[in-house]
Amino acid sequence: MDGNNRSNVANLPPGFRFHPTDEELIIHYLNQKVFPSSNHHLTFSIIADVNIYKFNPWELPDKALFGENEWFFFSPRERKYPNGTRPNRAAASGYWKATGTDKPIIASAGSQCLGMKKALAFYKGRPPKGVKTDWMMIEYRLLDDCFVSQRPKGSMQVSLCYFLLH
Image (cartoon, rainbow, N blue to C red; front, side, top):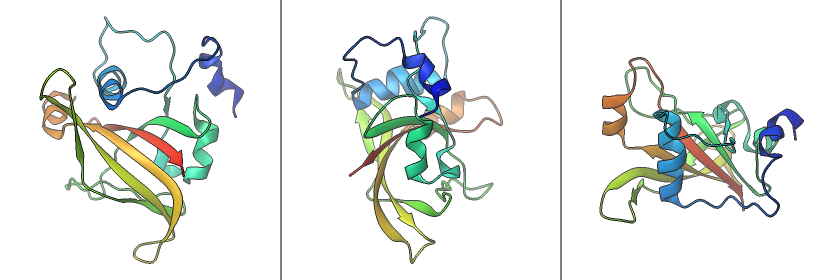
């Protein structure tokens, strides 16, 4: 791993484990990344900013700030077509394919939907003849309507991506 990437997490206490809930990922990480506020400061950064679609999944662990068998990244969520809403999930030598539908992340203290998550699998090659690999990703994103109304004009949507190798 790159020593520069790991310098922020060198001060973590012994035995530190990063196992946030879906709700914590949305509220304390993704929401703060997209809408930074002056009253919320993390003392260290544990999630790297990486455009995950420029790399193969097996190259990403070296770009992570933290993790051994699972890794977290903030990544831009690019569009496949300039005027469309369909995301571009092509990667270096393959593509990410959704394995199910979007699942809502509901606040624990009520019925408010905080965001969405989607499971994706990595396929080597080009569609429709790609070969499925063991790499899985969970993509977390804020609700589209909330994000579009509050984001600065011309800014790109950001997602939080959680990778694991099964």
